[in-house]
Length: 123
Image (tube, rainbow, N blue to C red; front, top):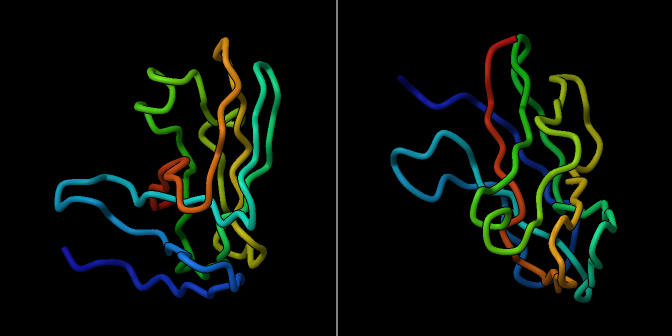
């Protein structure tokens, strides 16, 4: 199966920008990274809308699902609040991830941290 044609547009000049990428050959989803100018502290039970620094154009008939990363959840209690979050094929704004800290300690989110995964699927 050939990869879907997904057009990615960089929206940030933040150094170290990481576009969405599959981190292994068997990965179901692409990792999404935080495109932050400075670190953000997410306190327990606090929410944060985190920019990913890109917009995209999906093929018609597809959606992108934003899902939590299990490692962040198990180690820090950090997860996506609206999960799975749906990005429609006609959405052209910046991709952002809504995170919540269910852990007992504040979490310091830094530029380039992998915060979620994005799975592209037919509608």
